[in-house]
Length: 163
Image 1 (cartoon, rainbow, N blue to C red):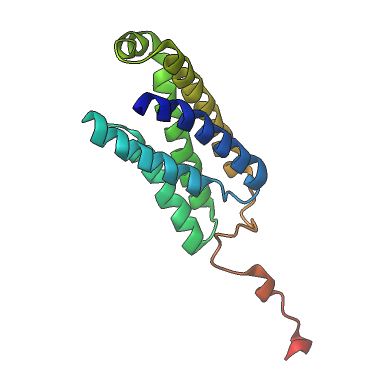
Image 2 (image 1 turned 120 degrees about the horizontal axis):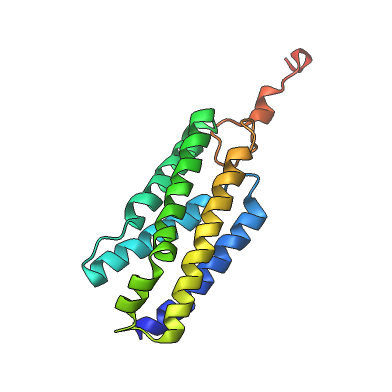
């Protein structure tokens, strides 16, 4: 049953991430839900396998920095922090891609060939997604209209005649 859930969740999560990026790249609104889902999944992996999953740390960083943006706005430091955290998530996924042969050998004892192919594709796709997300976040303007910004800039455009 667990393998079937993974076969369904891996592509669904990847597709959801890419749709979120497509729809919200200009605001960065896709980052928090993508990171939160990945973080929860990493926690479940730790509980099930009794092994460390670096996703708890890397996704956690994205969550923290996107929440900082939500409450303090999109400053240069926040831009760098979110982009670096997204690259850390990409690096985590890249470990599977780089060390695929020994990982494949280990997992083939308990997983089907279909699961292995889906898992490798998932890790490669999410590695690329987080690299693209880091880039798109970095090139977003500091005066972004992010819905996470705590300051509504339209309120700042007040004419003196309005008083």
